[in-house]
Length: 350
Image (cartoon, rainbow, N blue to C red; front, side, top):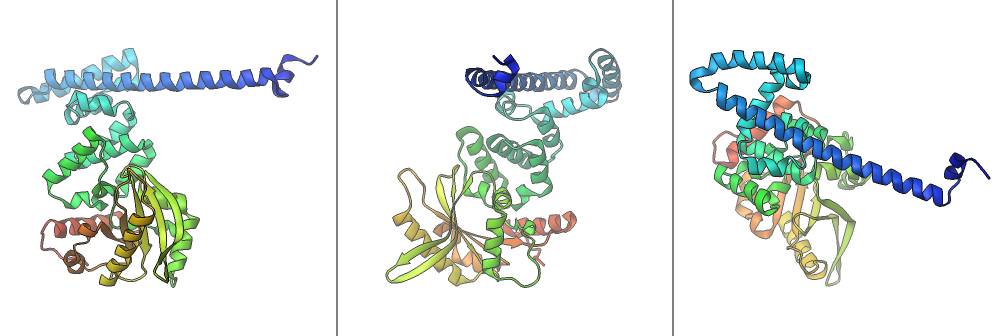
């Protein structure tokens, strides 16, 4: 008879038991870590609120800052650097920008304290709520959240181009009803520099590069997208048409048809996409799903053409794709210009 450790390695009942016990221990540890994170986050919120309410009113601002420094020294001595004066200021800011304890309760189940430290210094409340809710729903890691912020995801969504009251309505619909709208999902432009396409290429080259880098492409599209087909054949009468890419979005519960165009968007592209969407509605949509939606990815687009065609009414979105990474400053300027134009500003895009 072999040694006990050898028996576990060679299989049998002992090996199965070992695997089960490992699973139980790992699950318990993960659950415990989540509980600890929730309680720590709530503790930091209460600490921040207590200090803010008692020490940082307008009439006690300077005095309060001195007390915060003193509190930090004493608490660090007793409880470690998690309660240094710098950490206390994070907690104070946390309590200020997430003042609603009910909203915080939902967020802290999915977000860690590290997530919150990334979020609390976003000055625009709408932008901050956008990132916090998408982070909660899509369960982003801290690194993913940082990448989304640095990639200016909010500024690239159709949502950011709407008036503030409409932005608030859509964020609240996601927060309280779990309703994911197209304006939260689709963005413009899409940053496809990771495809590595240089110089001269064809539409099929872009499509092939996307399939090759499908995981990164879906990451750029956003969570919830599932790949369905490439070159989906659509037969109408005696003619065969081929849709470049077909996805399904779980949150919106609808098919997403994607067409790739090397040049600028043309009015004829709308008619082509409408045909595809009508065919998908007739032949592919399952009970309980919403109507298909189309996304035309092109090298550029003319604003007035897009406006006159009223593409939203046809469930069609048009977005540019950028194959070369831009410096952040230039990206920020271009997106600010786009938002200004969408909201009725006068500044022209380059």
